[in-house]
Length: 448
Image 1: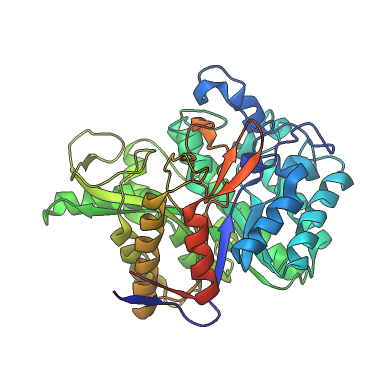
Image 2: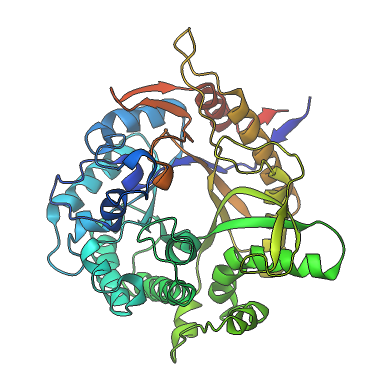
């Protein structure tokens, strides 16, 4: 056996998102979000599931924070629902919404659990979508007012902040592929949205500095690693295009102030332009304190003419897949973290999401034996440890997720949690992965 050791002070956490866990969709003055609308649109979400109740964390947060403490979490990543704070996105502030998050944060601090707050995890107020959503640059101004409201309210209480979770999903998955809210299928629209998100991010970072909030602020892209099937240049180029669409499109402008030019030219060949206005790139490239990385999967790909957007196709290598169908590829996390070091130097990195969908339920003994999830977490943590030994400045790891929850267009059919949730009774059952992760958080090492 080998021992995988982590540096002193490494932060161990878990993550959730507001729409996926809170429920209480019409309580506390909350307004409707695009996910309330999307989930009620026939054919959009598996079985017509919605987040009306979800895990009912709005009411059960004391129990859930106690569960985090029992798990030994040192930090907890959650998101604030914009429609709880400003129900129509642009009007009056809802003090009851702020009060709920203060109760949650106070409960975390009572147990010594550091909150990491994501300002935007996909629940745009529907009223703003009705005015064009993120395609409308006015949404940037509304977001800044929302961010300022939250910053000022939680100044001194929350010291870890991220602006946007997975901007690729907000833009391209939701507005080009149409798989998430609001469900559009327009490449130029999605490109507009992606750019406006980055402008909003950068201007929010500047606001954070100007308001003297203190602490750290960053952005959280979801990343992918594509290994070329062969050493042929056309395979290398196709895999770069596919991966850079998620990775470089959102990281390079933040870190270096420009989009990847080869990808800009590729889009231009499709008749798509990035809607850059004077001052945008300076706004986008405001200095961040950390880069959050959400990694789940990767794979092998090759060139295929006229296949999809990038002349790229996946090559099925026969590797294991999780129950949601994503390839099990821990090496990709190591490769990506080393890539970050090579491209961007010693920027601090948090693994803000990493986890696996395995739909194991309670066994005859009433317990949930999710050995496959334990194996997944171990192998990916080993990749993180390798990256740290290779000089990557990784500061912490947030497992996805604390508990089973609403998995977007998959509804309640896919389970990522280290805690099993019975959605009928709202009973929580810690899984074997919960117990494993608790030991890792306590000792800062594990055996493989």
